[in-house]
Image (cartoon, rainbow, N blue to C red):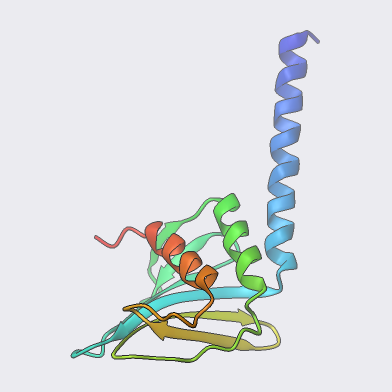
Length: 137
């Protein structure tokens, strides 16, 4: 086996191992689903998206919206796992929310769309990061 063959074999092995690690990290978080959404205002309309551990994203009609990369999914599940017990419920006329669902419980984090100086800024950043990945056309 020449250099090219060894290079291809090593590349495939590295990709396979990396994929396994990302999947294990998502499962290790203990989170079964993360829901991102917003709503309120005059109409009271709520828009939400459910992110599953495999990266699939569904809307409130259970229609597939998109699929995130394994890396992005692992990042969101890993970062939000530390907020599984974070308590913040400060709704406003227009509010954003993240619901972190695990086997043992469901934790709902709610804050005002127009900015809330008391919420952990990382929560808002993760929300915005997720929403930037969604094609809302």
